[in-house]
Image 1 (cartoon, rainbow, N blue to C red):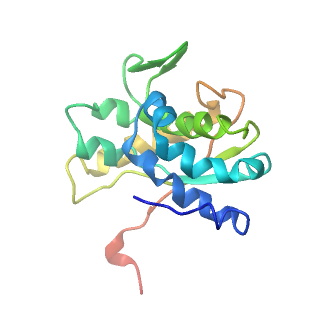
Image 2 (image 1 turned 60 degrees about the horizontal axis):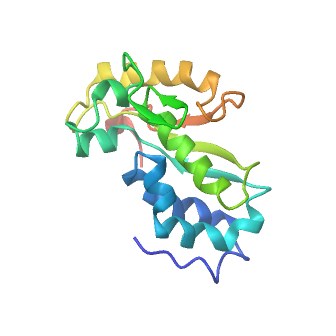
Length: 175
């Protein structure tokens, strides 16, 4: 992915969420912070980062589907029996928290300490992919509802605003 935000950053803060698409391929904060792409993408907008919310589409099913041996289903569905990732003194029991906190870490690196992350789209497929079942979708949604009430390891005091994507059956959707 290549983004050319430097010339557009002063005109539109709404482009920043699309620029964060590289997070879908990252599960560790360290990868994000050491990525030259993150600095290039976020730095031009850093002065605006103090007064905006960033929206992100975070689907834990996608990293799981692309790497089921490396990412456990229980980790993607918020039901891991123990912490799976440790970042300093922060412990992560699920992939969703890792992805949300990765955005916070990247934005804070450029002075956006007060930026809010809004998960504009999340969910679990009920058919069509590996592990895409109605039962897994139900587990995901129920666990997500409980999880967002408590914040993330880095920001436990902040509730996570999240929107569930596609709760309707596609076959019943009218054009």
